[in-house]
Image (tube, rainbow, N blue to C red; front, top):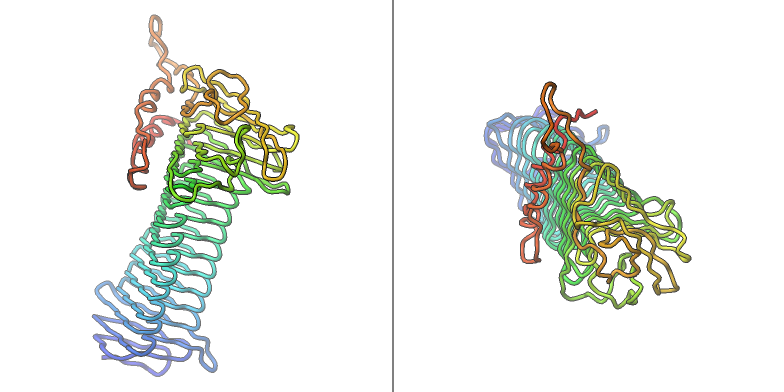
Length: 524
């Protein structure tokens, strides 16, 4: 049955019938199980009226359901769509979008929304707000899973799952905010999993997982900020790409990229800096002919920000491995030219755990490590920080504060100075790396470059409890307790493991480290 007062209100109770169309505002309430079917057009469609803009409001109770099957858009409004309550809404379109709001979309309450389209799962012309403790699923076919032309806000502690076969799982033209313990899981078979044109912010125990089988795990063209939250991103050329800088604050981050014979970056930023602080745990892994676990650079002709990495009171692990395959004839990343011996277009297999590079930047490349545990491995170098210039007058730097080099034994912060033939002229790469002898290094092929390095907080004696005696025994230090765990953490050795396995290997040990590393430190 169904009833409609001819104005705004429509009640469905056990309805099983054809399409519903209205002009202006439609408030649709459903009870029990309801089905709307149209094999030649839209399911539920609201268009602009003569005197009233289109608006579709759908609500139902916890034991109620609304199922819409259509060939064109299953649920459509030329204006806003608001879905509320604790019921279940299932919308499926065999030739269009599962849900199409040309205005804004709001989903609230604690219900479930399943939207599947041969095109978009959910398409929003304006802003989207998902404030729910329930579950939202958006599945796209030829287009996106969840496509928002404005900004997307996810809160309320619920779960949002988006996927696409051939396009982006989540595409946001504005900003993306995830908070309140909410979870977003995005996966794409053939394109990026998450693309955000604006800024991405995470806070309040939220979680984002992004995975792509054939492209980037996640791309953020603005800035990325993760506070008290978890981010996991896996892809091919890049696990996580951010254009305007990264801040991880008490965050848990795992990124990986695997791209045989080509460039691969676990975490890559361009034109701004990487800041890891306040008890964050970050693991980055990359496999490719040219790869870096973590890299930040500014490498343009005009001066700009970027090419700086700051790590304070955190745990970081960055691993880069060589992985051969088709397409390894050269790449565009800066490390390809950072050699005095081989022309950039011909050299192969530059793999650096942490790579920080500037050319014509506002300030030279810099890596700062303050009271932190940093593990880095690369087939070429564990860590490389350098600035490129025409005369060698600009140098990159590695700065350790309250931190020491534990591995290799006797390791040093060594100067790196290489003159090389660039694509157009002679240039100089000047900076620092972790070396074995402390002598100036002039080639990335030098055996004096450490391929593995572990930097730990400097040993500081822990004051003995009042009334106790320390005579006759060694001081117990924070760093001493960490050394065995750092040395024993597993680092992936080959390219045979899946990305999921790579992320798991050794990461549990890092999480354990952080719990003991900052015990007693009060966060501001």
